[in-house]
Image (cartoon, rainbow, N blue to C red; front, side):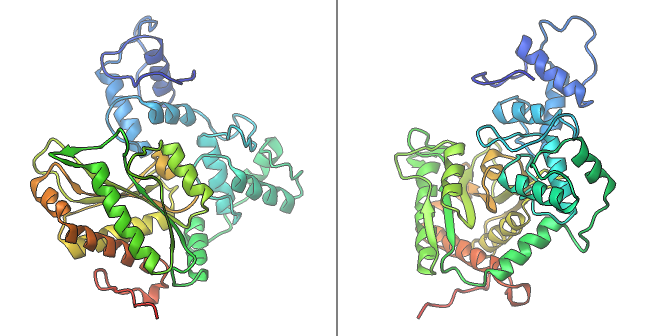
Length: 379
């Protein structure tokens, strides 16, 4: 696919070469029928919208039927199969694609630490590939070419007893000990600056989640963690800047805070999101924390539980540590809004986040029931 840099999101009703490009990608994936005539002035019709929605659903993207930057990039990545091209680590422009995901999954299944199976060929994947090549008598150049592909395809799965990434991450969490002293945690209040998010009267989402982030920061810091906020009141970093901030801080955990809004008068509750495609590749510790933090909040506040879901949003994908986005209630719902405007409720949510973070680092046999954990006072 051609570059989409600077292109406005494509929507139903749009026409032209960019639409034809998207339709060609959808056809290559078997999601759209071949054109019946000349597609030089291709139209973004209902069939295209349905195909885009299906693709977004399968890939863990926001399902809106529009082709924005993330959906366009995902379509570009989906066309690559393992063996289509030489794979190598480029620090300036990391290779991305389904072939990279396949390589990462194969290395992980064979017991090599290739990082998260996120479809981005970074230094962890290169290190895992070099280790595999050394062990099997190949040139350890960190490039996945024909010889390396043959070796990968000839070998069966070595790791048994569970998903390799889950085994590795769980062992790492247990080895690191059940305390917060020395943990680096990044809290990311959404929106900010010129972007207030959803506004209800004088209340903005940006101000509300910044207040919540500050309360969480205070509780985590009191428990011994080192906490960073991605923004102040007048700032609105891009998703790339927020993830780069967390990566540069070498954080152990990343939590993005939002509230939600919807036209339906019935939409209310708490939802959590973690990196995952919905078909295997996922951040296993991120998934665990997403469920922990949401359930702690629901148990302590009475807000409705909307569940936890895998997503491939860049905010979750580009972080190099377990990352979760928490949508803590609907400002568009009168009951949720009243609860969120109560400072005591926000304090309770902050305490719930603290309990969830602490539980994340406890061994399974010591993990208390949801809603009951109280962090002991430090002496």
